[in-house]
Image: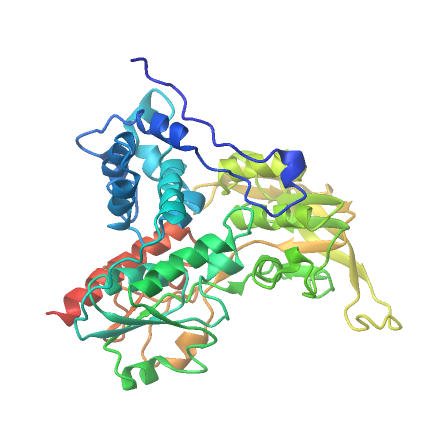
Amino acid sequence: MAIQIKKHEMPTQAPEVRAHNFNEVALGYSLEIAVEEAKRCLNCPKKPCVEGCPVNIDIPGFISKIKEGDFEGAYNVITGSSSLPAVCGRVCPQETQCESKCTMGIKFEPVGIGRLERFVADYHNENVKDAPQKPAANGHKVAIVGSGPSGLTCAGDLAKKGYKVTVFEALHTAGGVLVYGIPEFRLPKSIVAKEVDTLKQLGVDIECNVVIGKTLTIDELFDMGYEAVFIGSGAGLPNFMNIPGESFKGVYSANEYLTRSNLMKAYNDSDTPVMKGGRVAVVGGGNVAMDAARTAVRLGADKVYIVYRRSIDELPARAEEVEHAMAEGIEFHLLCNPTEILGYKNENDPRDPKNGFVTGMRCVKMQLGEPDASGRRRPIEIKGSDFTLDVDTVVMAIGTSPNPLIKNTTKGLEVNRRGGIVVNEDGLTSREQVYAGGDAVTGAATVISAMGAGKLAAQSIDKALNA
């Protein structure tokens, strides 16, 4: 049988349709397409794709089950390593991880591993209603701080071993960045809720509206009988450029902008205050920048710009997200950098007499010099190349840092100069029986890398409490 050179295309909403709704863009493989794509897998004995997966899913194993038509068997293989298969199948950068190691990719396109993982998870969620079997209790209690991907993974892995696990979440809904940061059109909230419900069925308790460091401290968790604590509180502190005009009304961090849309339902015409319509500039080139720009389109913006100081070859966002953004009409101003946000102040305006409103953004053109510490060519300002973008809203999507609240309320917890919690190779912090992982350690990174950290911590906690 001839080998199909290219992976099967993912069906999607047409750009002109999806730009006006928040429904999921990617529609998922059909059963027939999934089986045909699975047949492209060579089932390599050395399994190089597994090495590229931060949670070490047996990828050839689950794909073999798809070939056989045993979709629930495939789900069981995946969930042996991952607690969030429907999430990972949608948002993980497989092209730089498992698929980058795929043997098929040496001469042809790699197998669509992420698309197959999504298919398996969705098939299970649609067709299997039985609750997972709750493991027998082993008598140990563990607290998890944060219900993002690292916290949920750590909780799931420990619950499967019989631990009594409680997840403490600061917001009113569990899911962390999965619910407040990633838009509905990329990751439906119902998918996250389903994954969370599965963990609850395994015995995980989730306490929302609990801010660790304020409502409770790490020390108080130990006083409550928890034998170990995992900190997966993420990196929710937004970065700004510290340029003039950032205090004008209409300037958002990407965190605030996306949280207002995703978690506070601005996309559903709720009363959540967020600027809609007009001309929007999103500063940054990562996945968060693409999410913010594509959200602005759907909130009715007349024009949306991505402003990024390097070229398209250095864009850190997934190629798929960049392609989707371009297809939806977003204009890319590359090799440009903002220098000032312009606005006006009107003391008689009752809406905001203090800060005024955005009227534009001053930018300068850039050129690429020698590589910097990140390995990318350093952008250099071109003197005299200033220009002005006529915009009403500016969204800063230039990264986030860990919030210092836990550090400031936990004695002896070592952090690095960027505020990330310092851990050893087992995920253990400088405090005994306190572990950490995900963005709280590394700063903003991928969902799957955070899951890998949660998995490592669960293994280390289990080893320590059963030594």
